[in-house]
Length: 460
Image (cartoon, rainbow, N blue to C red; front, side, top):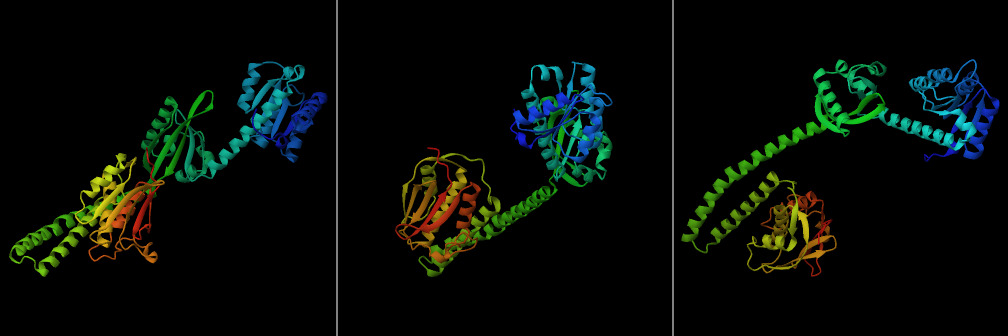
């Protein structure tokens, strides 16, 4: 039994027997809550249909003047797709075949309905065909208003139905596409590839897909097997225009190529003279040990090296995260701390659990937060890493971050430290977001800065 409100179903019952027509209409109304009306001939039924709207028609087959099949054909000519249930006096295969060809929704043995009083069965059939029609109407509304190209195509390539988007793409009138061979209405090579994928869908019983180009546009195509008729397998083709996406992908590739060239220049053309300067400084230190000038040069070179490392990270990795793996949080913290070159700083790590993350990028996240705390704090800064609900935090006992600038700290280039690049925290935010996490800055319990990463799924 379909989930449909019977009071919303208007049914026209047509039978040359006034008694049967009235009895059927009254039973459908009184026992099944339908709005049912009776007429005693096909011509009377057609007249009423021209004046009122109905959701379903129930008609006898054997009627004088206009039999049930003739009535059905007249309904189809004038009122299209109203569900039509035919009541036959005998199980005649020829009548059933003609009825199906004419578009009958269902047919029942009239004697079984009368003798067995199977009005419950008739009511259920009415609800079912009406529900199907309403679902079909909703589907057609969606298809006809869809910007995607949608068509039903048979195994041999015949177009059974096409939506307006397909007609627009092919610059054809929509009715003219029906019963055409798809290879005759679009580029044959593209059509053959789509037909091949559609046939694969029919044979496998599962959807298939591909991408192709047609008319200067790029399309992503999905092919879904559909049984529209018992004697003819078809598939539904849904083609979405992805030209803009392809153009964005091309532009992204061009940008990545430019970034890679930029990274190569930074890595080679800037690092080489920097290495020369570093070597010369070492020679100067051997001759001018303890000179303020050499110390300033050393700090300047270290700052340049930091800038180069951060710029290369942004250029080569950006917001990408490689295949996440299961990592131990405490191990990641310890590994990141091992690269910190600040003997006076200390780490208090009270973090545990396993999470899914890109190990190298997570280590980079911790490393940048550690470096940020050291750059902005005292030499003896203490950094704490611990679990919190939904993630972890990194805090320090440094001077903290004023309320009015906390929204700015993740901006690329923002820094208050003389030796800072202004890129480290921006990289931290990118790494967090690439994992699907969030990161916020707040005041630590001891007055320093606390960076809290949330949205992390701890595995145990």
